[in-house]
Length: 157
Image (tube, rainbow, N blue to C red; front, top):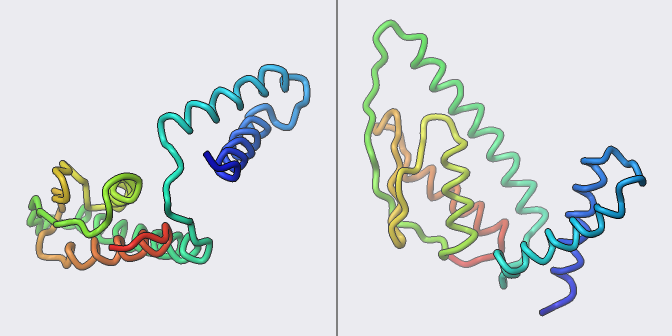
């Protein structure tokens, strides 16, 4: 196993511990044990992958996600305030281009966080998404999310 992933995770868990104890040095005895166990568990449960995170891709993804969240929130709010909401709920099946693993888990979670969409199932490369309005360009929006996730994680679609 390479040293860099172990160090990154150890530093991330140490930072998390430091935040949780509000910078106090009193509890670092238990903190060191907790950081070590958390690092060990994370390496066993989620081994380091062969992709590299692009910080520019993360920044672009964060901006896109915030914009899409706001756009979705406005759409859902507009539907909620209509006297008779014009809904066309559907479950749409989309073939994923992202590789299995972390990238697929990430897109499922991202879609679940965006207003108006909810992933109901992933079966192999097929993603089932419940949408409030099936007339909207959902497939194109999922493709845009896939492209941004691929760029952020440095994976090929």
